[in-house]
Length: 103
Ligand SMILES: [Zn+2]
Image (tube, rainbow, N blue to C red; front, side):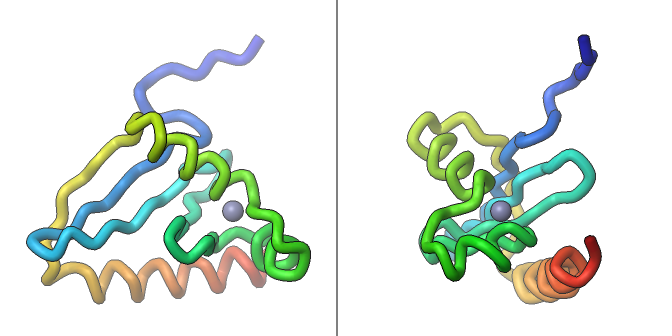
């Protein structure tokens, strides 16, 4: 039996809400890494998306999870200001290129 305690565990979805625009960035906390997803665009930063979903058209399990929590409204919402949006996206992009390039 594995013991995982605390509110944040594997596959917890965090929603970063940027105010006042209301733009949202979703991140999925995986076992070792966080992945960011854009459910509106059916995009995820993980390797299986990059190598599988793009060609097969099937969403990775992060996207499936994000769509599920959106329906259930069971995500952890964090408020940010629009001022931070660009910096946040830059960090995500450099992060996701690392995810894709390293096993
Ligand atoms: Zn994914």
